[in-house]
Each structure stands twice: as structure tokens, then as C-alpha cells.
Length: 152
Image 1 (cartoon, rainbow, N blue to C red):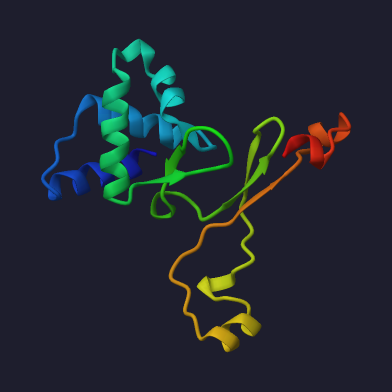
Image 2: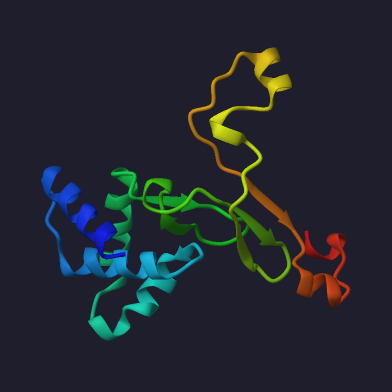
């Protein structure tokens, strides 16, 4: 975590941005939470540091512009934020339509940045990056008997 924060601090300076208490705090929260967080969740985690919500949004906007964080839109509700792939391992998300639970999936069906050969041959498309989020029902909701028609 410390190396990541130090690298980002150098990047900010090189781009002409200051390393502020709010920016450092937002990054610390994002590096210590395993799932994407809403701005309000980040703010709640920082309440004892007296950082206001608008500072959290400004930091997230800057980090998104610099490709440090990635905005994740997972179904209903406000967007969430997580460190971009350059600052954490590549992964995808499983999202429960009912309870909103999010789980990371670290195995990737698009190996080495390539589309499956059938699609590659047909389209000639060269993949640069990708995002894969899968929606359905988590184990807990399935055990409770929630049907897919109730959740959507």
C-alpha cells in the first residue's frame, strides 16, 4: 500500500497537482477496501479526519482523470470507485441484483487482452482493455428463495 501511495504522490506532483490531506485520505480508503465504494461510503470512512464530501468528490474526479481510480456503475444507485487496474490486480465483479453484494472475480475470460479466437477472426478487433460485470443472485439470496423475477 505504501508503495502505491508514494507512486501516486509522485504522479500527482509530475502532473502539477498537490498532495493534500484529502487526496491522501481518499486514496488510503480505496487501497484498504477490497470492493468499490460510493463517494458517501468513502466520506463516512473519513469522518474523524474532518474532510467534507465535496473534497472527496473533487479528489475522485481528479483521480479518475489521471486513471488512478475507475468509476464503476453496478446496477442501481450512485457510481462506485476503486483503484484502476494499474494500481491493483485485474478483476471483474459479481453483483447481486437483490442485496447489492459485490464480489471480485480474479479469473479473467479474456486471456492476455485477446478476444476469443472466433470473435477475433470475425471482427479483427484488438482488445486494449475491458470491463466485465456479471449480475445475478448471490448465494445468500438464492438460499432465501429470491427469484430472478423478484430482483429485476
